[in-house]
Length: 292
Image (cartoon, rainbow, N blue to C red):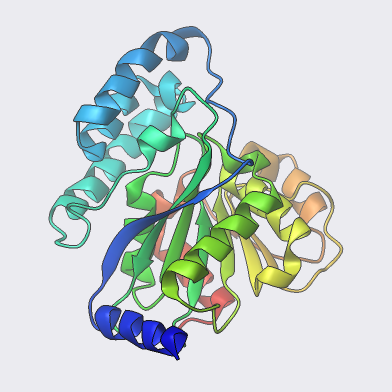
């Protein structure tokens, strides 16, 4: 009876009120500390200090002026800097996200963490039938603009963004299992429907690994701006999206590895097509996820 009361209280407290908050759990599967070298290593102490004192948007804009810190070329940084800046302006103007917690200090910790971390977007009217997205971030950490972007286009979804160091390409299935369990515990119930697993860039490689380990936990997987780790065998509900100007698309590697899996190449787009070709990318994601 107490459990039913607790469940009712949670939904009564959250229904109709969107929220963004973080969930943590004890783990032995946290990411190794960020391994950087050269100019990035020299900048890292100042960057970590800034993470403790400045808003995330300001930090990311400053970091993009030193693209090596985020593993970017100068050309890539020049392309996305104004687009990311617009995203953070939208965050500042958004009552829900203006004070949302950042995950970057966790992602750039100099030690292997003893706890896991995920940021949740709980939508208006959250309830037992709310659909779920689990999103794995790209290289550089779990930026808040990722979740803000997804919440803008999928406002009725519960969006779970696990943080895993600066690149979740090697995220173990055990970490994801712990994350899902921690979220379900926080929400007071198992998911009514299996989540979609989305991964971007390094997170796309991580999503391939996690989905291979835990296919029963997800309704499907969408790998964005990355390619399969091995040749696909036609497993149901695996999807791959890449920009037409990516080197692995131009040399045919993407097409060879994707095989019979569903795929989509964004014409004339590079690595950051979610920002540069937003509408066509979102239209395809909504089609694959059958979101109306």
